[in-house]
Length: 323
Image 1 (cartoon, rainbow, N blue to C red):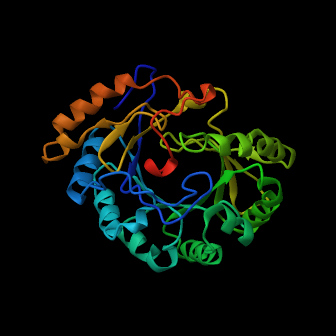
Image 2: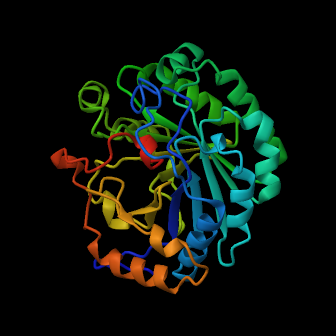
């Protein structure tokens, strides 16, 4: 089991397979994707070796991220590769939903068990302003199809933005009253490219937390391989609400996840100063050298991110690592 110097155990791997994205979200890629890497993304054999090695170190959950992972034509093969790895119990995917209606069945057939859709508003005009896309209706249709299928847990991620959140909160509350999805509100995080935007738009998740308590919502016990969200449920609602508050006290104390970039670098934290290249260990099927390398590097993980000090490390935008 991978354990760092602070006693944290790591059951959860976030695996980016591309940094390319076709949306222009205000808080991430407002000018669209800029091709500033060599784009030699991890191959399917390299992904298989990565996941196999991490499974030997106690990983039980793998989340496939981007950029937008559905832009890779071999995404179904990647999902299948991960799902067939022994000891991996949860295969999750985070997507902007652009290809959801046309591809969700392929993903589920390949073994996907959890699906997260990034959807920052239920108001079409707001959604378009935030993402640069007018696909909200299509994405909602895809979510309904996935719910009807029933093979994967469905969650929705919405970034909290001061300009929009008050108007849209009631829309989300009304939606989860009748829809069995988990909506997780994520505090906007500062990155290297969005400092001015962060100052203008950041709002604390405690504003929603207080509303939840006032409305009778109660916290749900977290699974050991769960993500960072604090989940809340209510007996009168089909769905649930989650909060991801990276600026809250002791947020990092329960960290259980590591990240591999689409270029094969280990990131001990989303906001680490740099990634640690593992690619040389991914050229052979024997996992022992990779296991040894990660087991050594884990001791460099810090006790906390340094977002409170406005230090964002090497993360210039979230598309680099998929959040």
